Image (cartoon, rainbow, N blue to C red; front, side):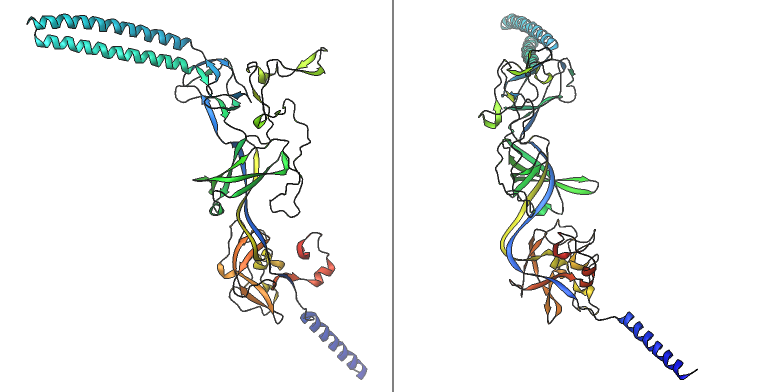
Length: 495
């Protein structure tokens, strides 16, 4: 081969080798860290749960006797007073029992009178030594038996009259009928259990929310803590409440243990929509609007006209609506509606002017801890570990990257949580650290964590002070140049 060929071959080999070396080794890339400063601020730890609204006191009304329902004097939404008659059971059987008991009583009275006369006669003979002691004792026993039979007959009459009185159903408390379970003509049987006929809510101006709290969170809930909740009917309005009870009885469903937490709330009128009420559900930029107070009320629901709790006395005569009916005559409200056929003229009716209804689903938030002006860091700083991005990472205990950890300290679905979350997947105390830069290299700084709202976590410890810079993630400049970060992703985080 000629010298020229050798030179060309040598140059080609050198170029190929240099290219391979560049390809496999590549230029040294400088890591750009994403950072945040330790600052002072407020942290509100909270627990979210779903519950159900119910009346604070809800009383089922049943019957202790069996029979056919002959009268219903209260319907849905009827306002009732304690002792008011709300239903009637057929009395025929019980009237017959009273007559039978009365006849038995009369018979026992006659037997007693006969025993008394017989005893007096035999006692007189005994005093004259004409009757032995045994015969007098027998007559005395007959007299006492007759007296006992009379007492039993009197009790039978009282029992029969009590059963007759049970045929009249009376409201046990003041309140509003929220449920009616029977109709006229229906037969109720009280042989083994008391059949419920009505349900009366004592006071709808005060209600309770019953929420199931997971066993991992129940240790943070205490009586007296503030609570907030929303309902689907008023998504822009927040209702306030207070935790009144943490029930100790566990509820186990498919191996999931929950505990019932009761929160008491005031039921506000529908039109009591405070403008500018600040939402306190932890969402940044939350809505500042009040409820949809301008929405028209459903048909048949009228204003309270100044009565407490939106209660209104309806007169015996219904007012015309002013709109012609099918036959050209004005329609009258409620006179022939199925829900009003049992309501007596002049009976008060609850017109539903309160915002909250029994059975509504409440999306609850319980404030478990409030801290003001404490040192805090973004929660991502506690999850981030730089060892995953260094070839010769820091040789410190706990420096190995946590399973499922990605750039920026984020966790893949199913990864562990951090303090201040629901409490599930808590990591060991050795991982309570943040990372700072010393001479351009990451260094672990042990911290003690406190309250957390999910976004920020309270920290304390030696070397922790306001203004120090901690690592929260990595800025991949090359990837960022090729793929723009999605709008709204915090810190330029990529999917």
